[in-house]
Image (cartoon, rainbow, N blue to C red):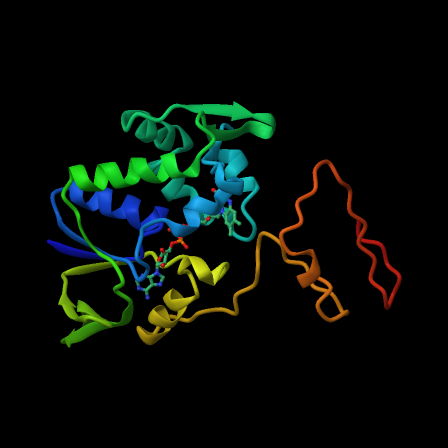
Length: 232
Ligand SMILES: Cc1cc2nc3c(=O)[nH]c(=O)nc-3n(C[C@H](O)[C@H](O)[C@H](O)COP(=O)(O)OP(=O)(O)OC[C@H]3O[C@@H](n4cnc5c(N)ncnc54)[C@H](O)[C@@H]3O)c2cc1C
């Protein structure tokens, strides 16, 4: 089967590796001129790969409906990603708070593991290729994917995996395209909100001025300025 993966972040790269390992012909489309641009800035350039905690803890700490992730976590665990990186030659270490990092402290080394495996599997990668539309056709009552439209023309495919990331840090390529593509297909897309730092203020630009601020071992007090009610 010919599989197109849209987006070359960690999800897209892993999907490409998985589909290719299962014998499919894979084309990975990335709109930037490189893979994993966001991965490089994770964990302040060190990449906090995963946690050593059990899956139950992952579910508990997932905002919203964490149980939704049960099947994914069951199919690929934190130990699996550690093993995958080990097989590509990267050792990891555990730090305070059960956090797992590469021993080299370099996110580039994590990215290199993915790139190495993609090369080994001969996955075709097309850079500077932005998907603008997922093409479908209707056969009786079934809508089938037939390919994608990109800034470089149309590419045919039997299956498509949408791995365009979210909307944070658009400079890295993830600017919310995926939501538009999903909407075009008829999916309902709920209003998106920041999850990591859902901080809002009545005062204009107050949160903006705190962007990038990283604090260790701090406490926070949350007071509603209208009702004076304390939440924390
Ligand atoms: C500052 C910061 C620090 C972080 N630190 C950590 C950390 O230490 N540990 C951790 O686990 N997570 C961390 N995260 C979160 C992590 O970066 C994301 O969860 C992860 O990158 C998501 O991977 P992804 O493949 O789904 O999406 P992304 O990494 O966003 O990749 C999506 C890719 O799709 C491409 N794309 C988008 N639209 C199109 C299109 N239309 N056509 C073609 N390609 C397209 C983009 O260019 C991009 O390369 C951090 C995030 C930020 C912003």
